[in-house]
Amino acid sequence: QENIESVIIPENGKFETSIELGKTYELMRCHSISSIVAEGSILTIQDEATYGDIVSFSVFEEPGYNKSEITITCNGNNVSVLENSFIMPDGNVTIDASTSKTKYTVNYYVEGELVCSQIYEYNDIINLPADPTKEEDDDFTYQFVAWDLENNIVNSNIDVHGKFVGIEKVPGIVTFFYNSALYFIIIFIVGLLGLGAFFIIRKIKKSRNAQK
Image (cartoon, rainbow, N blue to C red; front, side, top):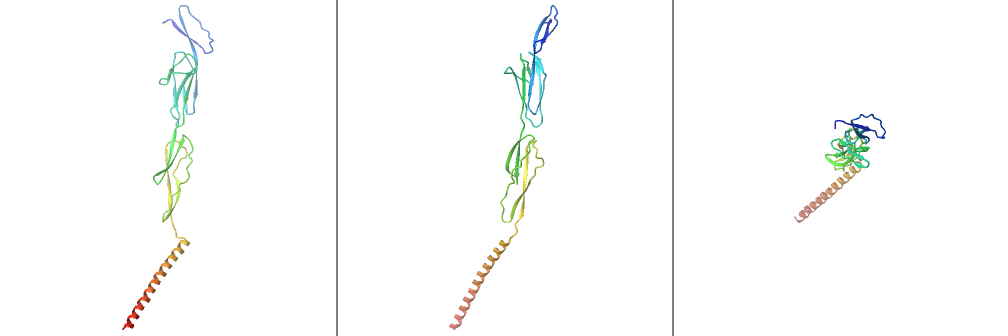
């Protein structure tokens, strides 16, 4: 075994070497390693290796991308991957480091209540929803002010809060005349009742005086 010497055969199969008598030579074919790297992945690996070598590689994901899924194939067959390494098969291999952008949720709250949610990918630009509305009450109408969004580029989950401002109602001309007419009618009715009571009392007095 000590006299065995490895001879690397390049991928094209052409090579020259010198031999010594008394030695045993092992011919080892060199195969290429090609890579397919998706956006967001950084792959570090050698360009070639010989059959039976342990090939190590490293993959880093850029911010905003999910962990890469590593697939290694040789002649259409999958190659087993263990802890960022694999055993070089007898053939050219392709390593695919696929990944995807991280998804984030943007929640919109008004007065503590969740009104809607949106799903975005990393670095997307937020498209704000339509302004919400709030029903008026006896004293106020309500106008939406704004969403408190400071940065419209998505790089995390975000909670956005909206705010309403109350506008106090001021009686208009129609309301004024309506109330005035209502007051007049009430006074008129009270006046008629008072006048009728006056005549009734006067009639009773006259009737008593006539009896005397």
